[in-house]
Amino acid sequence: MRISVDPEQCYGSGDCVHRAPSVFTRVDGLGAVVPGREHDVDVPRVREAAEGCPSAAITITEEE
Image 1 (tube, rainbow, N blue to C red):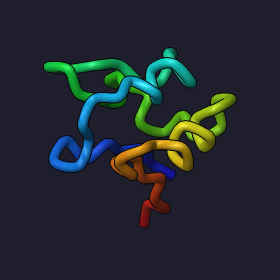
Image 2 (cartoon, rainbow, N blue to C red; image 1 turned 30 degrees about the vertical axis):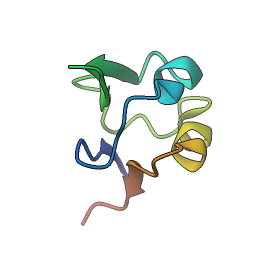
Image 3 (cartoon, rainbow, N blue to C red; image 1 turned 135 degrees about the vertical axis):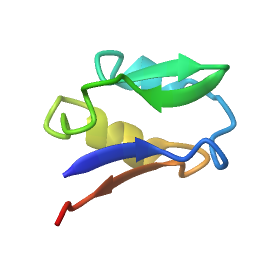
Image 4 (cartoon, rainbow, N blue to C red; image 1 turned 90 degrees about the horizontal axis):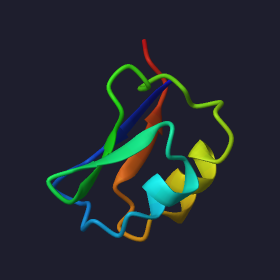
């Protein structure tokens, strides 16, 4: 599984960083996944951050 943040959709609320700071960060004021943490879906609160993202910019996808 892989976590991603769509910079075109994100408006920078920072909610993801607040909920899971070990996985999410801010880049140029927008949410982003910390490099190397793209697969840390099981970190507590990552799914909560994705589900609660006010701009629906966070996705968790199955990898092939």
